[in-house]
Length: 93
Image (cartoon, rainbow, N blue to C red; front, side, top):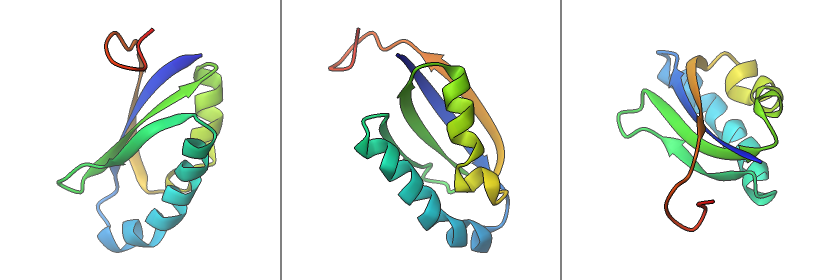
Protein backbone atom coordinates (compact mmCIF):
# COMPACT_ATOMS: atom_id res chain seq x y z
CA UNK A 1 0.00 0.00 0.00
CA UNK A 2 1.13 3.54 -0.76
CA UNK A 3 0.40 6.82 1.00
CA UNK A 4 -0.44 9.87 -1.12
CA UNK A 5 -1.10 13.51 -0.33
CA UNK A 6 -3.70 15.30 -2.43
CA UNK A 7 -3.59 19.11 -2.39
CA UNK A 8 -6.56 20.59 -4.28
CA UNK A 9 -6.98 24.21 -5.39
CA UNK A 10 -10.62 25.23 -5.74
CA UNK A 11 -12.24 27.30 -8.46
CA UNK A 12 -13.00 30.90 -7.49
CA UNK A 13 -16.73 30.41 -6.87
CA UNK A 14 -17.64 30.24 -3.18
CA UNK A 15 -21.33 29.56 -3.83
CA UNK A 16 -20.61 26.60 -6.11
CA UNK A 17 -18.03 25.27 -3.66
CA UNK A 18 -20.54 25.46 -0.79
CA UNK A 19 -23.10 23.65 -2.93
CA UNK A 20 -20.80 20.72 -3.78
CA UNK A 21 -18.86 20.46 -0.48
CA UNK A 22 -21.40 18.20 1.34
CA UNK A 23 -21.28 15.54 -1.38
CA UNK A 24 -17.48 15.71 -1.53
CA UNK A 25 -17.24 15.27 2.24
CA UNK A 26 -19.69 12.37 2.18
CA UNK A 27 -17.59 10.74 -0.54
CA UNK A 28 -14.36 11.13 1.43
CA UNK A 29 -16.09 9.97 4.63
CA UNK A 30 -16.75 6.63 2.92
CA UNK A 31 -13.01 6.39 2.28
CA UNK A 32 -12.31 7.25 5.93
CA UNK A 33 -14.61 4.46 7.03
CA UNK A 34 -12.84 1.92 4.82
CA UNK A 35 -9.48 2.99 6.27
CA UNK A 36 -8.16 4.61 3.10
CA UNK A 37 -8.28 8.29 4.06
CA UNK A 38 -6.30 9.28 7.14
CA UNK A 39 -7.71 12.79 7.29
CA UNK A 40 -8.42 15.89 5.31
CA UNK A 41 -10.04 19.28 5.19
CA UNK A 42 -9.97 22.74 3.66
CA UNK A 43 -7.12 25.21 4.02
CA UNK A 44 -7.94 28.01 6.47
CA UNK A 45 -7.90 30.61 3.69
CA UNK A 46 -10.59 28.73 1.75
CA UNK A 47 -8.59 28.44 -1.47
CA UNK A 48 -8.29 24.68 -1.41
CA UNK A 49 -8.07 21.54 0.65
CA UNK A 50 -5.84 18.62 1.45
CA UNK A 51 -6.19 14.95 2.30
CA UNK A 52 -3.97 11.95 2.94
CA UNK A 53 -4.93 8.60 1.47
CA UNK A 54 -3.51 5.07 1.53
CA UNK A 55 -4.17 3.00 -1.58
CA UNK A 56 -2.66 0.22 -3.65
CA UNK A 57 -1.13 2.54 -6.26
CA UNK A 58 -1.48 5.77 -8.23
CA UNK A 59 -3.89 4.13 -10.66
CA UNK A 60 -6.32 3.45 -7.82
CA UNK A 61 -5.98 7.05 -6.62
CA UNK A 62 -6.73 8.35 -10.12
CA UNK A 63 -9.90 6.24 -10.22
CA UNK A 64 -11.02 7.57 -6.84
CA UNK A 65 -10.36 11.18 -7.84
CA UNK A 66 -12.18 10.73 -11.16
CA UNK A 67 -15.49 10.18 -9.36
CA UNK A 68 -14.91 12.66 -6.51
CA UNK A 69 -17.67 15.31 -6.67
CA UNK A 70 -14.99 18.02 -6.70
CA UNK A 71 -13.83 16.53 -10.00
CA UNK A 72 -17.19 15.66 -11.56
CA UNK A 73 -18.69 19.04 -10.59
CA UNK A 74 -15.68 21.10 -11.69
CA UNK A 75 -14.64 22.40 -8.25
CA UNK A 76 -11.02 21.20 -8.43
CA UNK A 77 -9.14 23.77 -10.51
CA UNK A 78 -5.84 21.97 -9.91
CA UNK A 79 -4.36 19.16 -7.83
CA UNK A 80 -0.86 18.41 -6.63
CA UNK A 81 -0.47 14.73 -5.79
CA UNK A 82 2.60 13.33 -4.10
CA UNK A 83 3.57 9.88 -2.97
CA UNK A 84 4.44 10.16 0.72
CA UNK A 85 6.74 8.07 2.87
CA UNK A 86 5.71 8.37 6.50
CA UNK A 87 8.89 8.20 8.57
CA UNK A 88 7.56 9.20 12.01
CA UNK A 89 4.44 8.59 14.04
CA UNK A 90 1.90 5.79 14.36
CA UNK A 91 1.58 5.26 10.59
CA UNK A 92 5.32 5.05 9.91
CA UNK A 93 6.61 2.11 8.32
